[in-house]
Amino acid sequence: MPFLSYEARNFSTPLAGPTAGSLSLPSARLVWGAVTVGMTPFSMGGAPRPLLELGWRAALTAASLTEDPASGRWARTAGYRRLDPSEKRAVSYFLGMTQAKITCEHLLRASHLIHLDAYLAVVGQPSRASRPDLIGLSLPSLDCTIAVEAKGRTGGRTGKVTAAAKKQAQSLPAVVSASSAVRVASVASFDPRGCWEAYLEDPPDSAKVMASLTAGSLLATYYRPLVAAQAEVGESQVSEENSITLAELPGIDLVLGIPTVIVTIIRPLPLTGPVPDEQLRAVEADLLEIVRSRHLTSRADAAELDIAQTQGQPVPSRSYTGLDGIYVGLGSSWA
Image 1: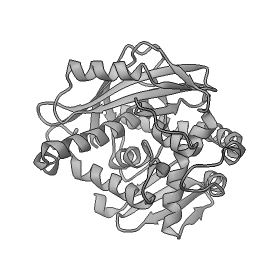
Image 2 (image 1 turned 90 degrees about the vertical axis):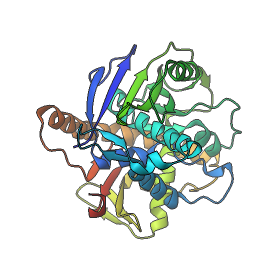
Image 3 (image 1 turned 180 degrees about the vertical axis):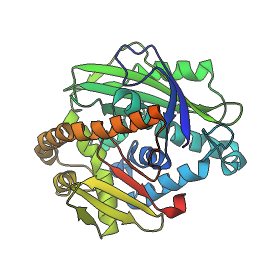
């Protein structure tokens, strides 16, 4: 089972795991991070194609990372190494965001991370000149803002890159309805053997509150592109046992599952472009209630995964359900 080495420093908030160690990272969990992080700011120009982008994210991850047989860690693929420098910068940026999503879920129970630009697009506000990477919420109470500056490196982590991430993380905005904030500087890099590793640090807090940014609207922004991608498939089935709507994505041998109750809440919204304020406010309370109520089940799933990792038990590698309730199942071609 591939794993990711990580280190976390200077966090003022309690972490859900050790400050350093090895995180078991099966393929499905890796792909879950890739297809859910950030989300597309649909109204920022161009025709929205959420299904194609979701497939692109999954394929890019598989093309860039592979298990190193000597160490058991995730490592760069030969295809990644063949890229020219400009291509590597783009791929390493995306992998940096993916890694930040996975480690923030594991250490901070923060499974909903979106681009600030994506949120501004939904509420019809212009993009900021100095844009942060990711903002989200900590579960289960949803009273803590998680703001992340994610950096990705093709080579090793440097002090200069870490300092830049810490500086930018300090300027990230807070959710107006949250009572506290955590700032995260996340740096994804490769060691001299080409193995992937994670470094996270909590710089001093200097949050700036955005009056329009609320927990409910952040959740709506997070789930909307996933519901839109699933809607593009056209055919889906509802699993009564798990109350989840499943759709097999054509061409990439991947099943995407979304809690049916969340699909029901999001579908009346326009799935592309800005959302009228009254429509957004109408779904906020329902989303908050659903996410809070689902957290205990999701947390139990996560606890079972953590126990399996600790005790050396087999961990399913071809399916994963995040704390956000999103299910990713990988077909046989991903083996």
